Length: 316
Image 1 (cartoon, rainbow, N blue to C red):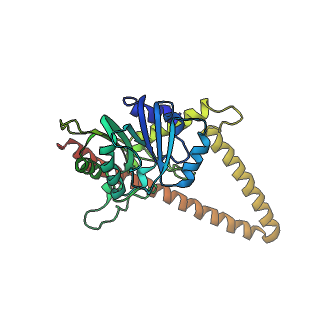
Image 2 (cartoon, rainbow, N blue to C red):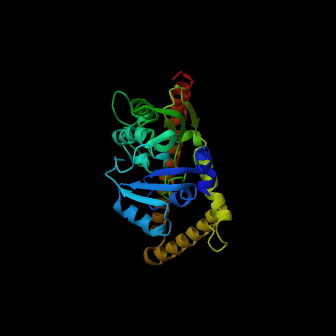
Image 3 (cartoon, rainbow, N blue to C red):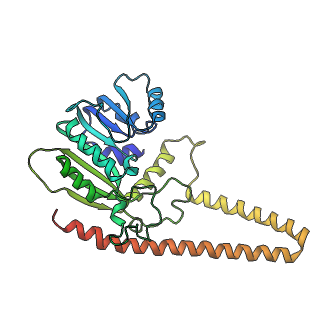
């Protein structure tokens, strides 16, 4: 569902095509879809383990080639042989020098009229120019490269002789269970990621279209929800958020009641009172963390409005 709702619509203009180069396929999360959209698919990854896993997973597909590289080289790919370059949820960890190296070589590997779609970090946009550190209100960084940003990507395209066509600034929610516990509005979650589309030079320079999309996390949440609802059998489907919260509260209450009974038998009412005090303090700390998360989210909302929205209106 994530592919069809989130990724596929953003690349539909460029596929199906002849040869696709996927950088950082991991264990084939997106490869399973890309291989049906091209006549030839080249997988390049720094990890031998990932390459071997993909080779085993797609052993019956003769259209796929597998290459392990050093994390920045495309020398094994012939020049002017690729129609489309794709990378999603992989190069977000790559620093500016690695992304720049890939783009420099991509200019040679792409066929005339070829294009690319790369998901990379925008955390560098939150680095304070005086201190050189990421601003304090960005507490969820999701292992993004600090030296990389949308601006850096555009400059790297210019240096490589490529044309940056469009950029979509998005936010991201980690996969940890507690990553989305406060359900912040998308405008309160930092735009630490960027989806950039580029192409081989056509000789006509057109300013890239830059879109600020704080609603991306809501799109992602909906895709996950739809996948749980329609793609799983009833026995596999996860309970709805309301059902999960209700069941969790009931289970927690029963556990606390059992604990209170044990403590009363061993330590009397004084021990029970101690537990009540501890739980009250823990609840206050949790409330404080939630309030802090929402306050930092409002700071990010202000920063995005002053920084990204203002810069989007400036001429490129």
